[in-house]
Image 1 (cartoon, rainbow, N blue to C red):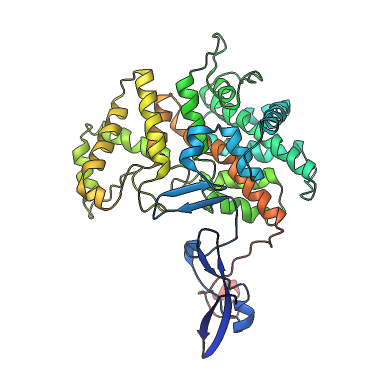
Image 2: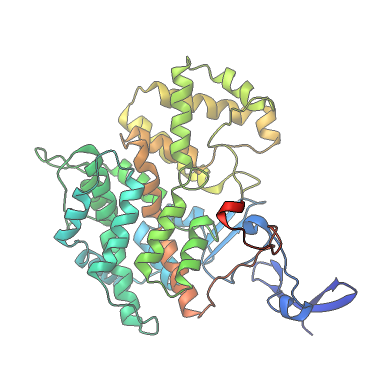
Length: 428
């Protein structure tokens, strides 16, 4: 016998089915509520208690600090897989065989070029343009060069669209960076792996031979894996709701980039560095700022600590903390801002106020440190996040379209004026 939940509205009892996920999550299916109740809806600002879909991609348990992609723990994937393997897993549901991975890599490389006219669009932006705005615009512009809509019932068309965006997106991301830095555009090297090729396009100088750094490459690979998907967050749900109108993959991802841009989402690691720089400018006294963070009457907010979803330690932070330490040791950097970061982290991990509230350094804190150490400008932090999140967005868009989900159309409770007559301008 199936489970049900009963809701009583205006003396009328309504029965709704209960849905259980494979990890024991429980939801009440209220899609018939409005019709059955004569117009009653639920209201949930920010959708904190509302499931917008059923999904087989990512499982997240914030209370216990668990994150899994398609059933695989984030810890195991970060240790044993590379970014392309994880991308394939997220998008297609299973880890690739050797043959599938080789083909996926080759097909992506075959699409790792953009039309020369894209450069004209890039030239139209000033150097001061934020790279996220540039990246969103260029991603949307890809539609003009690939105008045919994807037949989602065709595996071949779907696969071709996926390898196209996986191939072109790193180029657009790197070019947004080079535009800001005033460097000539780099077309990459197809003999390199996905991450090394991206780093070459980012950092290669026209008068020097580019040399890969294994420690840096492995750290960035891990960061991309850790950012690859995170359930129904702001940008992912944006990709799904835009795609639900049958907007194409490129347009949906462009919308996701815009959603990711905000400082409460993908821009958090940029906010971390800006906070550290402000502390440095004020003398670098970490104890002073830890006290300010604990003072409820002080507007100062300690960025990069705690998480909206994780009520325990962010599992991604445990992994990337090690990579951050390896990079700092490998580069042998002396940077006051990075020293402040290490001081804040050490104090937060030992201060009872932060420990009791589980306000531990999160993935944004450590990713900001890594990007800073590599000389990546703060404006590029969020595009780096977008590059990692790309396969998750693709997977979510693909799942939504294959399941033929209905167009997203939230309801509202109107709180404005009641009906009133129009007044001529002379009588207002």
